[in-house]
Image (cartoon, rainbow, N blue to C red; front, side, top):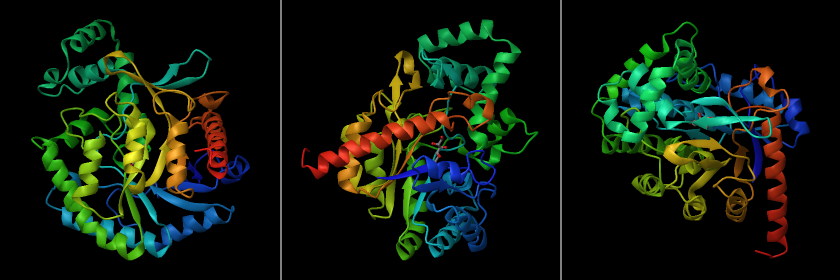
Amino acid sequence: MEKDWRWFGRKDKITLPMLRQIGVEGIVTALHDMPIGEVWTVDRISELKGYIESYGLRWSVVESLPVSEVIKCAGPERDVLIENYCNSLTNLGKCGIRTVCYNFMPVIDWIRTDLEYPCPDGSTSLYFDMAEFAYFDIHILRREGAEADYSANILKRVEALASRFTPKDRERLIDTIIVKTQGFVNGNFADPGFDPVGLFREMLKPFAGISKNDLRNNLRYFLKAVMPVCEEYGINLCIHPDDPPMPVLGLPRIVTSAADIEWILKAVDNPHNGLTFCAGSLSSGAHNDLVSMARKFASRTRFVHLRSCDVLPGGNFVEASHTAGRAHLVELIRIFERQDPSLPMRVDHGRTMLGDAACGYNPGYSFHGRMLALGQVDGMIAAVRNEIENKLI
Ligand code: DNO
C-alpha cells in the first residue's frame, strides 16, 4: 500500500518536510476552508497540488469532498448541489486527482465522548462512552423520545451522571461531541461564536421521519448522478463507514456492516463506486468481523484507513494501539497488499504522547502518536511484502 498521511493544509503545524522524513509517500487532504456545497475550482485545486508537489510529495487522496446535508435528506435544492459536486469532481479530475473519500452520515460525522482517555502507559487515546453520549442526547440536546433508543442499563447510568454532572462537565461534553470532533471535518461547525446545541437541533429537523431506506435511496440517487463524471475522469469515489457503526440521535446510518456495504456496492454496481475501508470505524462495532469484510470487499476498496479498537461492555469502545485491538491489522495488510500494492492507505488516528497534547493538533491527529503508528504499520507492510515475495503466504 502507498503510505499516506492526513495533512490539514498550510495551517497544519505538521509540515510537509517533517512528513518526508518519516517515510510518507502521499498526502490526504482537502480544501478545508471551502464552504460545503461550493464548487472546488481548478485554480484552488492546482495551487494546493503544486504546493504539495514542491515538497516532493503527491496529493493522493481527497478526504473529504463533503456531501451537503440537503443531498442526504433529499431537500429541494439537491440537484443543484449534486451538480456542484459533479463540477468539483470534474475539476479534481482535470487536475489528475483520482481518489475521493466522502461520507453519508447525516448531521454528525465521527463521535467520541473523551478525547483524553488515559492509557496505562501515560499516553491518551480517544474513547466512546455510551452513557455519556445518551446523557448528551437526553439531557443536553433534549431530543424528543430519545430515552426509547437506550437500554434500561444505560438509562440508569445516565441518571447517575445527571446527578453528578456539573455545568463544566456538560460544557466539556458539548465541546467534545460537537465542537472539537466536528469542527475540523465539517465546515458547518467551524465558525467561531456559534451555538453548538442550537445548530445541532436545527440540523436534525430536515431528517425527521427519514428512514434507513430513505437514506439509502438518497445515496443511490446521488451515486447514480455522479458516476458519469467519475467514469469520464477515472475517479474512484469511496464512501467512509459510519463511526461508530450504528444509528445515533434517532438518525439512520447506512454504512455500518457487511450487509450495508454490500447493498451500496450493488445498488450502483460500478467500479468507481468504491469503499474507504476504515478499520477503526468498522472495528468499533462488535458485529463486524474485519478480516472477512476485507476479504469480501477488497476488490472495491479504493482507500484504506488503518486503526484498531477495543470494544468494551455496554457499547463503549476505546481506540487501541495499531498492533492490538480487534481489527487485526496484519491480516488486513496481507489482504490489501495482495489486492493492490499501490492502494492508498493512511494510518488513522494515533495516541496523544510525548508532548503532542501541548501542540493543539486536531483530536486523534497527533504527530508522535501517528508517527509511531506509521512506523508500526510500515514494519508490518515490509514483513507482508517479504511473505509475498518469498511465497510464504
Ligand atoms: C475522523 C475521520 C472522519 C472522516 C470522514 C470522511 O477522524 O475519520 O471525519 O474523515 O468521515 O468523510
